[in-house]
Length: 380
Image (cartoon, rainbow, N blue to C red; front, side):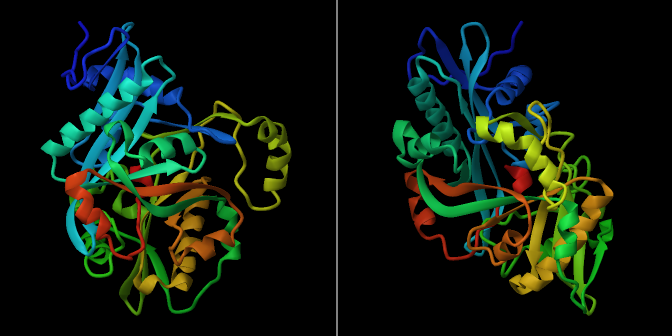
């Protein structure tokens, strides 16, 4: 018998759909929904969660809950996820929420489904600790941005925090980065983790930087599940830790699937790939393929020194070359490292970062200081 979650009864149930809390028995149906719901744009990318949707939520937070819209035939037609974890906000550690996974297929009662999804988020909000949430929207998804930013249908209000830029870099671009004397780079060991955690947090931590613990690292870890100590590069100067950058392979639990290309890009893809080989750019896989790559994680450089960042990035690309994988790295539009990345050949895409809040989070959202935001790419 199919397991049924608790119904969300703030709106009367229609004949066509019901919205309820997701349960483990929905896992396969949710994964199918994600696969057939790519983001719009010239590159239609679907972010899949094989082999387990619920297991993949561990990297997003420690209190993951999801609502699904279920059709009468049992198919899952909509999804929204709420999560939270400790992060640095205005220089202090506090619970920070994440809203993600919003998918609603074209259905007659789509507005009602969205309203019920908002009711679910509001109910979870009342039971949780976070007062504000982070939410990202791809630049190509203007309809979603317009809907969410208006605070309609009971959705939380959004405060625009600026643009995010993601770059997919071929390992071969390492030759375009400088070598600076005085720095050393090595892989971390398990014994280094306490020092790494202390370096990442505290004074000078980026806005929204997660608060990590030793148990978050490793194949069975939580927030950094799959990222081991040896995957973290340490930049040192005169024996002092001056930078960190992790190389996170999430292929075992989260994938980026190419659902298709726009007509023009589809025609040009063979020619683009031919030129990419000579211009140190990653190629574009065929539709239906997964984009294998490493995600940059735990990025922090003492004093936000762009030269030191370039040194650490060069070594990260060398490590990526050993695994024959490109490296994806995301920074905010005000990040001092953005000019370094823009100067390199890449495949890039843009999104926007929002702080989402209900009335009890308005004061905190409006008080966010001028620190440069940080979003862990592997936690989206």
